[in-house]
Length: 492
Image 1 (cartoon, rainbow, N blue to C red):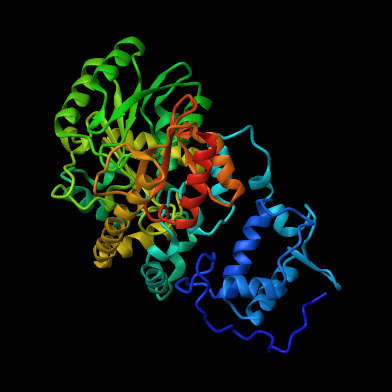
Image 2 (image 1 turned 180 degrees about the horizontal axis):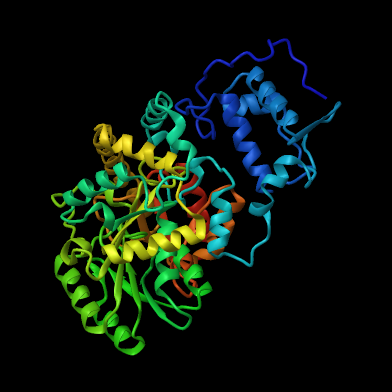
């Protein structure tokens, strides 16, 4: 049954100023109707709102949120059409029991599958459930409205005006040559001298890390990683039979005494680390520590994998001192990785590895065996973005916006009792101590429709942790902080 109204069907509802405290906002790129639909769809998909639950009446919703009844009617109609709601004559609107075999449910079957508690897969599955960006303070990317889709669209249009014949073949296994030449210039600005034959493009930094691990590791090898660090590393290295051990991260880099002890005891093959804008702490390695890390790598014969995916969000040494291991080592023992998913588009899976020419050839051979080539269309898009000069202005805007957002987020977290690990004036993340185990906090917050990133996910052994990572771009949501504060009070 469809809601009947005298409002013209398909008419775009007029903007209104939603009531204070409403989840609706007049500043969103979405219309009020679209916001209502997205908000309820996400919570019904999450089963935060259960099948059979009664919805507020049209009159009640309109009054509580300060919108017109026509707006609510249109939103409920769309939810009915998409299978989320049903109308019961004389009784109102109810959440529909949805068929698990329906198209939408099938598309989300992986995301909805049960997981054994909070682990890396739990966070990954929930990242792909399409919650509104403002409800994902634990996410690892910037919201779409922070990015510049015009850069991507202009590159696509430019490519469309060219002959398409070049896009019909596989492309070069090592990557699109003009892009590798452009990356040579980019790395030179970071004082990393490299030739195009030393650069290999990948399907994102994740594939780059995987290629390195598959090529260099054997079952039983030890891999040292920052603790905390990016959680996706741990499971993949363990699948290859490697032993993953954490090196405690301090505000200026790894704990050198611990690194030396572990290197002496375990003879690691790799140390995977981030020198600049470390995830999740946003800290940078000092020059003195970088030199000592290279000294230990030489003494104990292990390679260093330097993940610099957040490189372009760093505003420069004048704001936060930064030393890259690859710049000191010039790719003799360091393998350097970068990418553009954080600054251009998460869906634009273009990453790269810079290393010795010999290793680049070996990794290219492995890349061909696994998947032939990486998609050249994306590489051509990134090349045009980098080469036409607009990317620098885009980065200045992102850095400025992160700088403006950081202080309010820190104040909001401190108001509810959280203590930041460090307060660097740069980067995308805040790593904060809650004082309680954050696994149950994350589960409780998900029940309210908020995706958090508990600290256990950033520990190699995934042991319980009182720490939590917050995305600066989405961590200032007042309603989220209110729910989080109450959850922490209950847990304390």
